[in-house]
Image (spheres, rainbow, N blue to C red):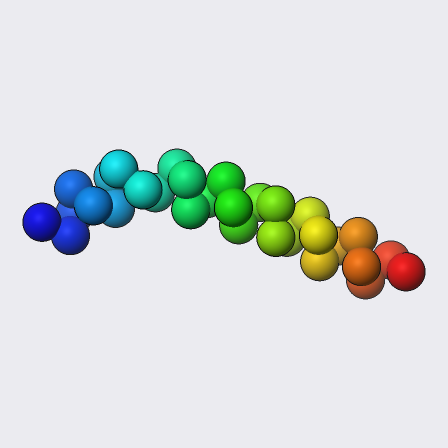
Amino acid sequence: SDDNNWKNHGPIVLGHLRLVLAWIATNMKL
């Protein structure tokens, strides 16, 4: 089901989001 899919991939997605947000924050300082 979609719920199981989210439970499996959720942590990976959140990890990528943290990287993206950090990248954006770095670029906005420049």
